[in-house]
Image (cartoon, rainbow, N blue to C red; front, side, top):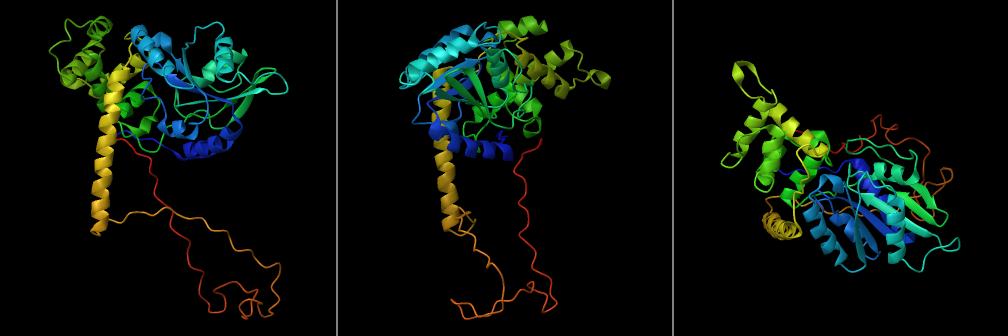
Amino acid sequence: MAVQWFPGHMHLTQKAIEERIKNIDVVIELLDARLPGSSANPMLAKLTAHKPTLKALSKQDLADPQRTALWLDYYNSLPETRAVALDAGMAAPAKALIAACQVLAPTRGGMAKPLRVLICGIPNVGKSTLINTMVGRRVTKAADEAGVTRMEQRITLASDFYLYDTPGMLWPRIIVAKSGYNLAASGAVGRNAFDEEEVALELLDYIKAPYAALLAARYKLDAVAGLSDEQLLEEIGRKNGALLSGGRVNTQKAAEVVLTDFRAGRIGRITLETPEEFARWLAEGKKLDAERQLRKEALASEGLIRVKKPSVKTPAAKSPAKTTGKPSVKSGVKTSAKTPGKASGKAPAPGPARKPSTFKVKR
């Protein structure tokens, strides 16, 4: 199952960023330190490609410190990019972010040329919590749930530093399958868009090798090596009392335990990808996506499927100020103030049917 989630308010956020970016000096993209590649929005990268960018790895206290160092080196090696790691325990995150942004935009600053910064990221990455910590009071709503922030707002961190906060945003189609699972495991995807049991199995499949000791310690397991993903999930269910009648394991409950423990950091400091792994996944995803597109074009050329063409907006026709019944200058046809359909007794034609929602639900 491919994990996808792009509800309507995210499309509005995309449009808002397109407008706001014109007057922005620096972009701060908040990434999840446990999945720094998967939490980097490729659509946002296109929207902000011409702007200096600060990659802020949030929740570093939940991530593997050795892997965090690898990701910081990777992002700091990119042009016009700096990277810092943050967590909820930092005493002065505002100073760290302001200093890094000033390095990226050295010609901005002072009341005449205040530094204008856009902060964005995926849902539930900790952006609202970070902003509240920086300001020293609650200015944005924070919750351990995706999609809480819905509106842009401007926050003044210093007299010459304006921070524009945007709602969390994913992208319409996630082509890296592993990224979809990692995003779901982290809590960046709405609960109804994925199957918890499948995501938990994918999570265990990855962490049971590099973090076997953490799993064994957390769930008091004698051994992790040699167990399949399904066996490991069942063992965790038994250790946590997730049982049904007859001693059968409630695998749904066990999956919820695994995901909740991972998100809270109870299993330990875990990072789900390295720069090299993510680069390989991305290359594979692009290859599969290109093959899918070729198959789609081939089917369309044979007339087996219909490819939806992008809609072209045309200016709405202006209504006349009043209808006088006089001949139109352009057409020579008389206009009438009557409602269409009344003369013949027929009702107006119904409008177009509403499009079905693309929001995926659990299988």
